[in-house]
Each structure stands twice: as structure tokens, then as C-alpha cells.
Image (tube, rainbow, N blue to C red; front, side, top):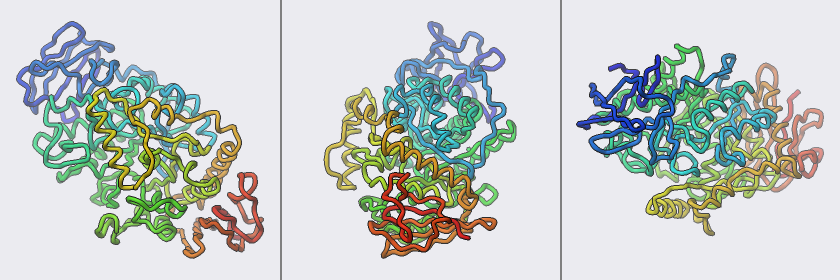
Length: 592
């Protein structure tokens, strides 16, 4: 048994190589169109076959001890999660991106998007004409929310049940490849969100094949994926090979691994480290560069420390704590997990220390939490909003519905001057007014009712008032679509131009562009609710003065040294007033 065995169907030298893991099965067959092919049992619980009778486009199922089931490693589910699988040759696409070189993480400026709601048609094909818009803003990498096949046509993507298959309604494998190729030819990197902490409930046939889950650990989604119990070796291989598929066959530049704190693995070698080791081996073979980014809220630097420092080797992580501190400073509510954040002092701590909770007591968690980190700034991704922080509000309100126009500009500035990697959520650059709601399209009524009930219970912690739209309703999906007529109108157009200027300034000034956590100083006036962030490099010294209060504050900044003032009338503000910083504004200036 080769350690690099790939699950599912792989085409090589005119042959289809089939491998399915079903260790407790007594008889396994493959039904291809109207033919039945016997599979041969191999070691470690695999059933395999090599055949020239299977061609790309053929529909198939596995017969596992009399049960007809789709392939858990299917590359395509043209009829959805309950339908037959389809054989796909991932080597057939004609790539034109040989010239492409993936940038370093420090040169990423990320734009998170949801394929279904980013454009009117909600497909990969529909994204391609919008790439010039993203380039015009200054984006260098798009991050696509999960595309693994999920039930129906409306879903955030975290209910995927075929990790190897690309959502059929988005355009399938060929559509994703075409998008990645187009991005690379435009100079854009592509990050793909993947989910290795759980699988969705509808269309999840994994347990019919083998022990993909373990009762050792309980997660919010039920039994944990089996990364460290009996038979875990082949489950680990399934997900390692999945990560390699995206890098190797789809030319994806980086993976964002969802909520890795929910991965339960107490093996001597954590699954994340093993994924990293395999990715490094692939990069050595191909000469391409790939990054691994994690969503992670344990504030444990071991996850992002390099392997040679006994870490798991993840290249970067999302920092929700920066977001939380920023929103509380901006006047956002302090319900739920926001109770841990006191405003401007914690925002300054986020600039200085990356982790706000780095070994100090957390009132929300009722314990001392986190570790200190000296990891470089390029390992931390910050934002003022993202799909979670918007969509997990009961009404899905974006910052444009919660904060003033001036405060939105200040929050954008606070992100862009940070010594970390900045990320935007789709539409924020023009202050999109539509919400981003939670939506699903399940077919099981009991499951639909459970989703509705779970959402209501989740909002109870935030004492939300009002009634949320039904996640199952088409209306919830349609209301979440971006309005592409807005960027040319009124304040939306002003906001878009402001983002372009802000991002352009970050890129033009090495003191801001380099995510250096060392050459940095923060000065807080808690009473005035102002924060001065100073950053410098190679003789260039830049000040970023932020006024989160509702009052003008005295400043000693010469007009000729001002590089950007969000209060200027050209940005829809009240106008600059000599010797003061206007309420809810940011001034970026040079020291001379």
C-alpha cells in the first residue's frame, strides 16, 4: 500500500484507478452506468480496481454490502449530494499560468467572497469579469468561501459533504479551474476555504463506509472526525490528500482551514503538521509555493510556529480579537464574546501583541487564556468584518448598517495601517447596504427545523431583538447578494475611492506595507478615545492618529505632512479643520 494513495477515481495513463476505504465491508462493487465491476480487497481496509472501462463523465456508485452509495471522494456530484457520482479527469484542463508565482504572505491583501452572492448569477464564471474591479482596489488575493458539494444551491459552504467535489451549481471543477487560471493571469492569488473540522449533516454517507468519526470527542456538529482513534490513519490520509488536490490539481495558492480549534487530535503528530509536511513535499516536487492559513481562536502560537520550532507550521491565522477590539472601540455592543474587550486599550494591545489575551484572565471564558507570541506580522490576518462576524448576526447587518459613514472609514483605516495582513469582506469597499444572512437549502424538514431552532438559540447570547429571516427561504439568499449598481452612486462611490486611496497609500509607504511588529509604538488617550499608532522603517516614520470619539481633538500636525485625512470633503467628510482631528476619523501623516 503506497502512503500517497489518493481516494476516489484518478485517471492515469488511460486507466481509471479506483480506491475506496471500507474496512468492515465484506463485498464491494462499483456500478458504472449499467455495468457492475468487482472491487478487490487490499490491506488497510481499501477496495481497489484499475480499469479502462471507466471514462470521464461516467456516472457511478459503490455497492457496499448491498447499499448503493455515492463516492465519499467523488470529484463531481452533478445531481447533488444524494445523486450518483461522476468520474472527472482533473488533468485535462489546459492551464495558461506557468508564469505565475504565488506572493509571500506579507504581500497578500485579501478579499473574502462567497461565490453564490458575489455576483447576480452566483458562479465561478460570474466572478471573472469582476476581477478588474478587485485589481483596481489593490487586492492581491481573493479568498473563496468553501466550494465542497453541499445540499441544494444555497449555503455558506460549511455544510459540505463531498470534500473533493466542487459545488455543481457554481460551475464544478472546470469552472473553478477556469477562475483560478484567470486570477493568475490577472496577478491575483487564490485562497480556498476548506473544512476539516466537521462534515455537514445532509448527504453525509461517510459512516456507511467506515469509522470516519469517533465518539471520543463531542463537537458542535456531533462526533468528531477521527484523527486520532482506531483506524484514523486512513481518515488522516483522506484529508491530507484533499489538501494536496487543491494545490496540485486546481493550482490553489493557499488554503484557509476553518475553525481548526474544533479539530480534535492528540496524536504525537497533529494532523495540521502532517498536512504541512505533505504540502512542503509537494512544493519541493513542483517548485510552486502554497500557504496554509487557519481560523483559530485558542491563541496558541504552537499552531503557527514553524516545524523546526516544534510547531505545526501553519503560515498565518485569522485574528478575531483585533476585530472584536476594533468594533468595541468604534462603539459596537459588548454582548457575548465582546464582553472580553474594553475598547481602545485592547485595540492598542492588538496592534502591539497580536493576541489580546496572551496569558491574562478572560472574563468571558472565566480563566487565564492564551500565550504570548513574537511571530512576525505576516502571520496574522486582520479585518473589520468577515462572513462570520456579519452573517452570524441575527439580521446579517454589515458595518454600513451599524456604524456611521465616518466611522466606517476610520475602521477601514485602522485595518490598513496595522502591522498585519489586511482582509476585506466582499462589498465593504463601497459600503454595501444589503445584509449577509445565513442561508441553507436542505431537503430534510427535520433538519430545516433544527437549523431554525439552533440559530435562535445562538442569538440568545447576544440578547438580539426582532425576528431573523428564515435561513431556508430563498429570500434570505437573494437579500445577501451584492448590488453592483451601487459602486457608481453617491456615498458608495466615495467610499470606493477612499478604499482605493487608503490601500494605495499602504502599498506606497514601506513603513505601512511591511508587516513589521517591531518598529511600532502606540499611544492611547483613553479619556479622549484616541490612539496614535507610529510605524517606521529605513528612515521613514509614519503616524496614524485615530479619533474614535464624537468630539474634535487638538492635534499638532502640519497640513503639508498629512498623507490622508478621512474627514476631508473629497471622502464625504465634514472637511479638515486646521489643528484638529475631526470626530470618527483617521489622519495618516509623515514625520519630518
